[in-house]
Length: 148
Figure 1 (cartoon, rainbow, N blue to C red):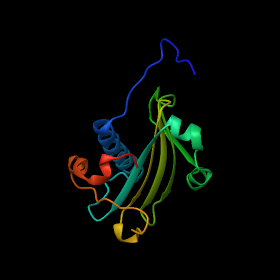
Figure 2: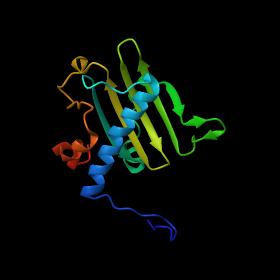
Figure 3: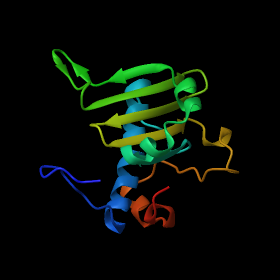
Figure 4: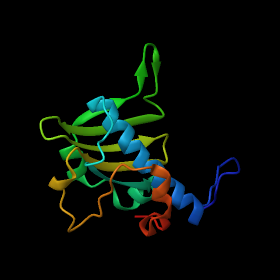
């Protein structure tokens, strides 16, 4: 397949993967804050993943993600609207302190994540849940060295 002359190309290597993993986790924490109006407590737990548009073009967005996240959100402040560059689907259970989201940034990067106010309600059988300590320390975790 020929690549258009004016196409932008980026490579995703080890350092980029670490930074995208960190960004995905920070984005989930920021959206949690947006909906709960407070930071996720240290006793909470969260996890996030990122995918490229090529990942979803190949496999599609899993329909169950869209089903469990029926609500729509974007960044709006007065007349300023970022719908074209940032939008997300989400679900909030304020009573139990649960939050899930699937965000699209521009047209090439997707972030999915879950956060819970009480980390004890999260099952560790499938996912390694993180606690919201200093985000920079996350870069040293072995799981941040690869695309999840």
